[in-house]
Length: 521
Image 1 (tube, rainbow, N blue to C red):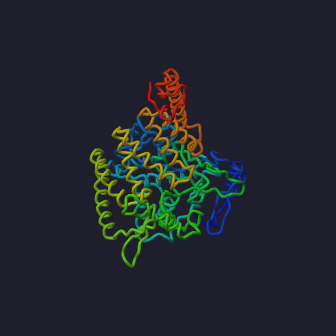
Image 2: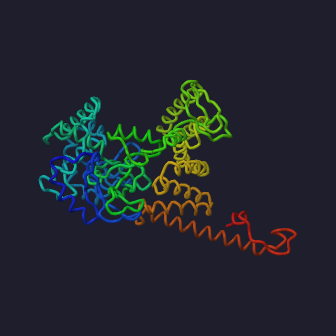
Image 3: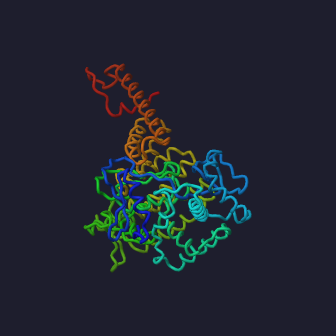
């Protein structure tokens, strides 16, 4: 979100460039620039796509990605700088004009300093080098690909506290150290780091695993809503914004900037801290205050002490107790604080075990945390959800498909509560559930889960990516297997004597639901 800058000579060329895509840039009071439709869009239709102005992969000690396409596996270092990685000569050639300058700068740093480069520093270095290449006309400039669009992004410098300003200034000095031959204005680069903090996007794969960071100045014009009409996904580094509901002509395009699983209070606080605005979307401006409090109590509060009651609790400040709104049972504040403190300590230890790669011990500890949270939190609690997400990942890494499936099925009801019907997180959870059921030879349930996954992901991800083609193939296999098993089951039922189906009856009866579930090969 940003106010439109005074120097907006880039705007008319931009409007003309996106006009053919059925879009325009408008300005709204209190919101600044907005991306608005000039035609109708249908669910699943691509609204806009853009390559990054600059990007950098997250190359860590565990996962590394190609600087060109962000692919993993079979990567080779640039033989000169030993920082950039490439999946092949094709990506290396495509990146060469930019990396040639970057490579020279990195070599001049020395090995120790090269190893200390963060993704943010590399992203800023690449942004400045790309600006230089465009100014020198080594690479072309277009209406949707130019540095003016980056400068037009709001930096929110006046909202930054002293600690943030100092941090960005230190980072700007590091950039100057990397590019000593380039004229660096520390104040301007400090502002650019603030722009990146508010406008850069995490580049993710089809399963929403982060690969790196990129700046997409046209897509950054799109404003936020906790109930968005569009979703942002990536195909390699290409950002794709697709409609998730019918969007009539003249409607503002909206995506979500943040994780929306949480109460409106939590979402508002996150948006204020990271993006410096107060959200006024329909999801945050609920008329019913009690419904808002109830939602907060369920998602982020505590459960009734009676295990047979699924009620949620409100805090009574006079008596320092939480009261169940369903059965009226009290729960002592001190008891809750004690359990919370223990969970916090266990979670810290479990995270360390997980980061060290000790999945077996971590799984045991997370199961203990889960038990404590089941006693403490509502069944739809976001805290309990995060623990189960961690357990799901661990169980998949340990190839414990049955335990993973149990976690997956416990997560689904919460996802259905906190996300919209068409949301990539919900679709991917059905996809994971379907894969696990398929591995466990439960073709019937795999077919149901994968069908639900396809219904969502073909809208959020499109239908032509390798990820979706693999999903379609898996769905076809599950459908064929389920049909085969059903045919075998019906053949067994037809060929049995009548009395073996229902003793004492002289006529045959249709098979029951249990009959369909007989496992045969």
